[in-house]
Length: 125
Image (cartoon, rainbow, N blue to C red; front, side, top):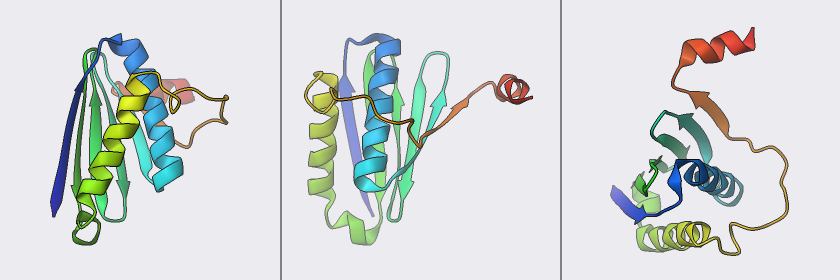
């Protein structure tokens, strides 16, 4: 097993950080076949991501992104390359680079859940 830990401080504030993390999740789903779930909270959000051989989460706060991932044995062989690509992608999004800009996309596959499950359930009725 190999682990990836990436920390990036930012000055986006929580609202813009949420948008950036959502774009990151869209890209992870499209490019790497990840299944992402966004869990919104009051003072932070968590993007949980998974696919065969990879499990992890991206914690979003008003001033930082903290990504942790556990790679399986087969995928772990490529840890350095995977970590480097995640860092480049996240840095580009945080810098407002080309990866963050683009044409509007169709609605993402990413599921969005709120911490307050009873309120979310009430909205579905």
